[in-house]
Image 1 (cartoon, rainbow, N blue to C red):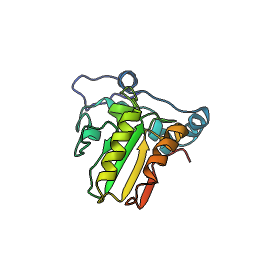
Image 2 (spheres, rainbow, N blue to C red):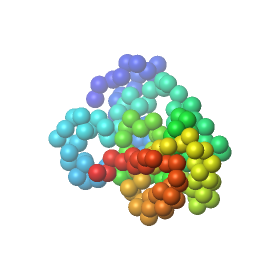
Image 3 (cartoon, helix red, strand yellow):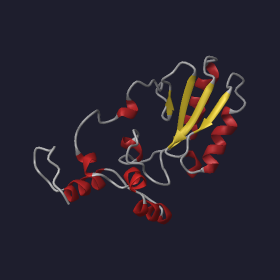
Image 4 (cartoon, helix red, strand yellow):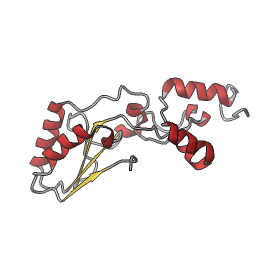
Length: 169
């Protein structure tokens, strides 16, 4: 492998990838792995890159600019939207994920029933919220948890749109 020259200490790309794997999990199904071997663009989405070992940007961009009102799994970046992240696991880990600190390096903690209830009460209390995005991780990885959240969001009268963020379809 070639050396990456952007780093102070010149390490091989292989050494850098091993560092990345030590910090951020990697996961691909056998079918996705076969596809990645046939397609460079697919491989770049899921196979760790030595460039992930380089320090730039912020460590936890997922945490920036949001107001969760102290409720784990709730984000409020825009006035008319709430984002619920009940589950931080995925079927495959995208290397570009801006939630890496939780999905690939974190404990993949899920929202507790209490967190979900607090988030629902918060959404119910603010009629400016028109859209709820249920994302993750990937909410389709745990259909029972997704159904529980949908059952609580659906009856809220001022919610006009419920979106599910997934790459599993």
